[in-house]
Image 1 (tube, helix red, strand yellow):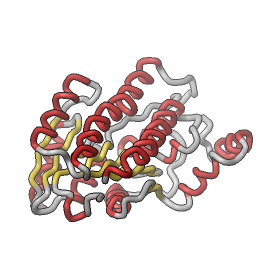
Image 2: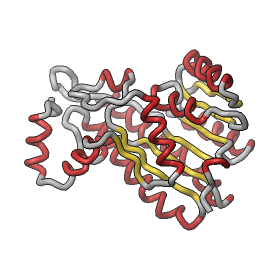
Image 3: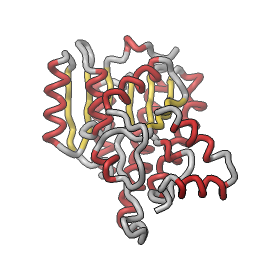
Image 4: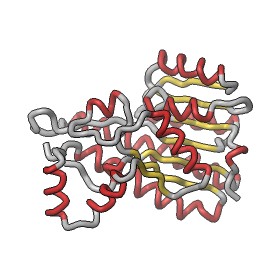
Length: 259
């Protein structure tokens, strides 16, 4: 049976020094909750930990780059040696774009993005998913993006990486459903953050991270297969994948997402 919202006392969040990850940590911070927070900015993690502790949570911060595979594997072993998490939120990610002059993405940036958004995510989730499956309870949330529905010309590699995360999460949900482990794919639109600001193109219906975290938690409590927002942007993004490609590309160009 899937863990109930009340039983999520050991929560792991990657990318916690970012906007959505930090907001999720604060959303779950409460007496009796242990938060294991990963990020690359030690100062932001420490500041976040203090706020979570004031809310009553026990916190442990780990500042390192998830692309360091040896460090990542050691970190997972350390987490599971304490206890298998009740909830893992795989939130860490980065974005790149084709540039202001539309000259295209650099090879080095593509490699870094794929290592973090896909490789590190899968290497993080896979062993913890197996541990949850063996225990018979747990929940995993993978942060994708509305860009995972249909690739945006201004951010081709980012769109591809989030489509991969979406497909991976959907496959995991089917594999783990009968083992008492829930898997949810989260597909946000624009959420106020430095990464969002740096992304080219319009940011319609932008949400503050606190609102996004609240909606994500509500969806996780219901074990939804997919959490996407905001409406109607999520509905429109879904339609882009169904329409003829020529029409979808025309719409994206009209919306100024073509570069």
